[in-house]
Amino acid sequence: MFEREALPADPQAAVLVCLDFGELDHAEGVEELVRLVESAGVNRHCVVGGRRERPDPKLFVGRGKAEEIARAAEDLNALFVVFNHDLSPAQERNLEKLLKRRVMDRTSVILEIFAQRAKTTEGKLQVELAQLEHLSTRLVRGWSHLERQRGGLGKTGGPGEKQIEIDRRLVGSRMRLLRGKLEQLRRRRTVQRRARVRRDVLSISLVGYTNAGKTTLFNALTNARALAADQLFATLDTTTRRLWVPAAGEVVVSDTVGFIRDLPHTLVAAFRATLEETVHADLLLHVVDAASPVRSAQTEQVNAVLKEIGADGVPQLLVWNKIDLTPLAPGVEHDDCGSIARVRLSARTGAGLELLRDAIAEVAKRKGAARGAPVDQALFLQTH
Ligand SMILES: Nc1nc2c(ncn2[C@@H]2O[C@H](COP(=O)(O)OP(=O)(O)OP(=O)(O)O)[C@@H](O)[C@H]2O)c(=O)[nH]1
Ligand SMILES: [Mg+2]
Image (cartoon, rainbow, N blue to C red; front, side, top):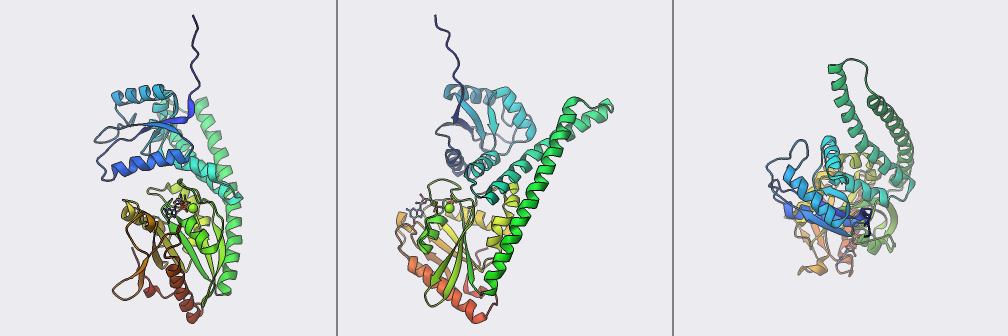
């Protein structure tokens, strides 16, 4: 008889574990995790659900659930088990031992996508820094756990302890090197930005939830050909283009990385240099996928990240995009004071684009009139 050899586990297959702890947006969270793993290259998956009051401290899930996950991973021959929540380093280790698969949490999936997408030197440096930060919290925690052991058992310290100490030092010095290089790039950007300010050019940053259509809008506005795709985090690096607005002159538009809820702090910190374009912009075009059933939650999440990076004071204009997928017509909405609050358009069909150009022209004219003074904040509704 033939002896059947076990096939190597499939790196494009994953079991997604999405426990429900009573969150209001649980269903959307599951859908988003599916999109995240697909964006990372997974093409076969199954979802294991379940309700729990709170996570199990050791395994995150209960024993019975862990066995269900193991069976699902076996059936799918999956290399990965992905959890829709963040795991503690101990939980991750325990689960890997039990499931004999690679265990990832949501943060690791996002970091993986960023690592796959990074193209420019700066993008690559930023991603590596974020990955090392993520890893270092794990090493530090492993270390403090051993330190406790040492306190109880004497002062010898085993080989595992030494290895962690070496790893920690290597990770630490690599992180310092990366921060140094990023700082150099940041300074270069600052010089470029100062030159723009001197020339009195209006600078606009596109911000928004990932997949809202920022790059598509950027391309439509500037005739650029940046990659827009139906995947999460298609854009990582900031692209800047000049745009000539009739009656207003030159405007500089930047397209950048999209946001997502609970964006890992390590990423926000590492991408600070890229996101500085946003902090220093005269105007933010906050692009919203108007066809999404969770558009208002996404708008809030974006505002939360803007606050975290210190860009919540920059005037903002809401752009409701993808109206071709909704019954909405192109148009401009004003608030009670007559200021422009929102433009409805479709970056794909171009409907309503001229309304946005007019709105930008108006801001640019005001900036010109104010001769370097900040853009009239009252012109726009502050949405936060
Ligand atoms: N129907 C429709 N689809 C659109 C519109 N704008 C963008 N899309 C689609 O939405 C998807 C995401 O578009 P992108 O422009 O890559 O979105 P993004 O905000 O830059 O996304 P990230 O860079 O991944 O954060 C693509 O498949 C686009 O073709 C629109 O106005 N209507
Ligand atoms: Mg993009």
